[in-house]
Image (cartoon, rainbow, N blue to C red; front, side, top):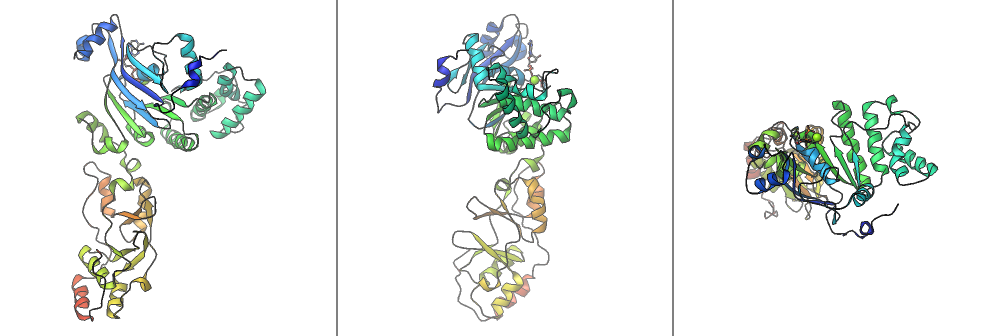
Length: 439
Ligand SMILES: Nc1ncnc2c1ncn2[C@@H]1O[C@H](COP(=O)(O)OP(=O)(O)OP(=O)(O)O)[C@@H](O)[C@H]1O
Ligand SMILES: [Mg+2]
């Protein structure tokens, strides 16, 4: 088979996929309907001309991104994804794949683009029932004329990748739903395209299997780094998988943003209503909810400063960091008090290890155990290991409900020393020379 030459000449810096002002109207007068929609008609006002399934949709999908299109049933998701691979011809607007037009090209060219660039995973698996699992996976390679031995070897390799090693000889009917969908994914991977289109790929699966598949997809994505357009009507799934999410309503994209954008800054009441039910623990990260790192002192500060900080924050310990804000350890109020009483100037002799720390991009779900185990507000470290914030337990709990995701409240730790006691010690002890500049 001959490939259209421009397939090799794609623009390297272009988005993986670009949709511009896409419309799809099903019905008797689609063009007239589009003209009316363009001049401001509502969807229901053109219903005598046809069903406006997609109205003026524009978005770019970047290479390596998981772009989720989310919306209720009938909002136009499948119609959009079908225009992305040319299964539906757009009524108006353009689609480009890596800078190459997909709309307005001939059918041979379209088939070429689909085969080379776009693989699809379907909701109901769409496996060939009389072929073995391996033959199903090898199917795209067969279409390309790859020899049998080579394509079956490749199929085995990919089956192992999706956790189905040894199942190649079975018929699809011998596999559970979750396993069949892994075959569907394996087949799409066998096509070896940069782009995967997944239309409600996990919706037919039981909740537990579904979650497992979501996790497996992210796991695969870490190594494969495909560009994925993933369609779902489940906001939790959208939030868990998506680098960015486009929310659709009645044919229109009403918001495009990161899961955090959509959760914390919904574009309108519709999106806001949607996000009420989101499982925030799987979406928000430590970096989203952390607070200013306090109490914290620089290692050059002395026990008196540390003690004062703890008194003001009603905390029983303080983070001690170096000049780069990298945590060196913690000092408790009791230890700081001993140091003050002994007239010592340095905290370093009483440093204890930082009990627990998490990374900025850890999701809240992974913070509960560390939070419970940490006597101090949980330390959050940035990519360079610097203390970038802390998360008190109350903040973690508050973040799980709707409303502002951060509070300025301070956790009262178990048994901080009474401030009167601290004041007495600070007043009694011989004033030691300390670096008081550090706060
Ligand atoms: N081939 C078609 N002919 C006529 N109308 C269609 C066709 N395909 C879709 N529609 C209509 O277009 C609208 C959008 O449908 P679409 O299948 O894109 O929605 P969806 O968001 O994928 O929904 P679901 O979650 O149910 O899959 C619906 O009103 C649907 O009835
Ligand atoms: Mg659909």
